[in-house]
Image 1: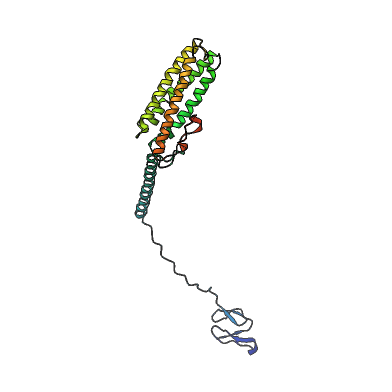
Image 2: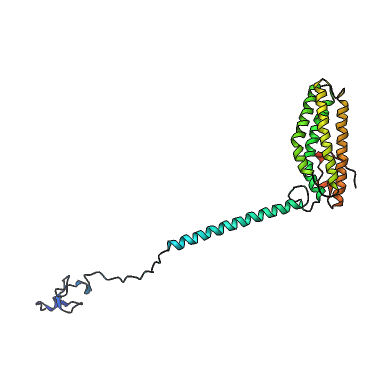
Length: 253
């Protein structure tokens, strides 16, 4: 394309090479925008599209199968932990462990004493109450105390038999005699209550029955000390199993 004019007013298009006016904004031949002699394409540059990683679809059946197996594994692990705990608990119970007073290797005499001690402590408190009421002339108070102690023996009788019945070894017959003592206490308390209800007091007609209760306590203490000797023979320290609240004082070995 030919243009007329002064050479000083013309210049070439940097894009196509045709002559054009110096102050032209666009080349009349190719249409390229002019700015300081640098061609400006009218179309925006093309930015190459970056490749994207393919997305693998999740198989719903595979996902459900995996979840089911995870749940089964969790149930199996929980069951194994539960069974292990039960086994350990039974082993501890079988060896006398977990009583809080005895050693894990306690023998039959000491293990039974750990179960018997709380019951002996309870009886000691009840007997002291009866003795206090029997020391005066309050027949009604004595009757109430005897009734309370007798009811306590009745309620705890089953626990007592479960605690010391069937003990293996030399202490077994001794524990059986302790059961006989408790049965006799129950009968004596009934006599005391009946006498006190009729107006008898501990310094009067109920004195003989109160004295028998004291004798039964001494008998129980003697049996307990004999059991303490069996504990020593079985390798246990009686001091670890007899409690001060039982009110028993055994001679030193």
